[in-house]
Length: 318
Image 1 (cartoon, rainbow, N blue to C red):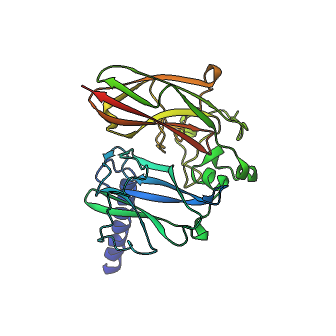
Image 2 (cartoon, helix red, strand yellow; image 1 turned 60 degrees about the vertical axis):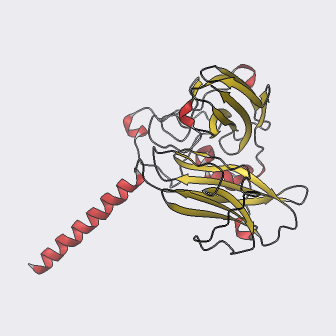
C-alpha cells in the first residue's frame, strides 16, 4: 500500500512538473527579458562585428525600457560585470544603438556593434532590468563565439532549417529607404514610408513547397527545437524605439519576431507563406502615431536567413 501511494505521489509530481513546463512555454506575461549575445565575425578592415538580440519569455507582454540605468551598454575588462549586483551604468557609453521597445519571444540578430581590431579580451556588456530582475549579455571575441552566415541561418531556422553549405556565402538583401530618414509629423497624421529591397544573389531561392493546409499539417509538432521559416525576400516595419502601441501601420506588417503560434502573421507561423515582392520591389506603407514622442522605426529586409536593417526616425508632435 505504501509503495502504491509512493508511486501515486511520484506520478502526481511528474504530471505537475509536466503541466508546469507546458504552462511555462505559453506564459503570456510576468516573465523577465533577457539580452542575448549572438556571436561575432571579422570585418574587412580588421575590426569586428558583434551581434545582439534578446529573448522575451512572454507570449504577449511587451516592454518599453528607455536608455538609462535599466537598459545600457558597458565596455569593460573580462569578467568585470559578472556580478549582477554591480552597477556598470555610464551615461556616456550606455547607448550603442540597442532597442528600447521589446516585442515578445525571440528577436535574434537584431543589431550589431563594431569594435576595433585591438579590442582584445575586453567585453561589451548589455544590461537589462525588467520585472525587477537584472540580466546581462557579454559580447566578446572568444573564438567559440565566431559565426558566419550559415550559423545565422541555422539559428533563425532559415530555409526551413537547411544546413546547405552554400549558406556560408549567402549575401544579405539590399535595402534602401526612399525619402528622409528623419521625419516630423503630428499625432493622427499619416506618415508615408517607402523602401526598395532586393536579394542580390536570390539565395536561398523562394520555396515552391506547398504550405500546410490540413489541420494535421498545420498543428503538427515542430520537427526542430529552432523555429523555422521558408526562404524568400520579405520586408516588414517594426517599432524599435518608442511605444509600439502608439503606432498603426497600413497595411499590417508581418511580425519580425519568432511567433510560432498558428495563423500568427509571422514567417515562423504555420500556415504562413512568404508573399511575393511587390512590383518593382518597392514596399509602400503608412504609419499613424496616436501620441506625441520620439520614435525609431526599423525596416527589416530578409531572405529568410540573413537580415538588413534601416531606421526611420520620427518626431511626433501633438
